Image 1 (cartoon, rainbow, N blue to C red):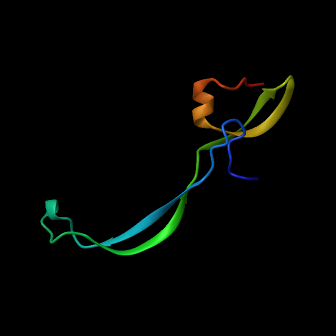
Image 2 (tube, rainbow, N blue to C red):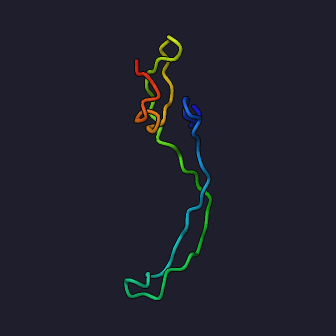
Image 3 (cartoon, rainbow, N blue to C red):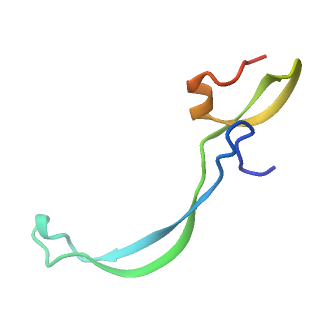
Length: 75
């Protein structure tokens, strides 16, 4: 099952995960340094719900933004 919203097409967004070392300055340290950077994915908040599409009931993955907007009709 793909991690894409069935209504708006929202999918995963690439990003970075930073590994830091050292105490930050506002807490009395010398400052935090970035020691590593790896790729990660930011995934949308998908819920598997039954919705009505053109008169038929389908179970699809829908993001919570579309559910809150009211752009779907629940079965």
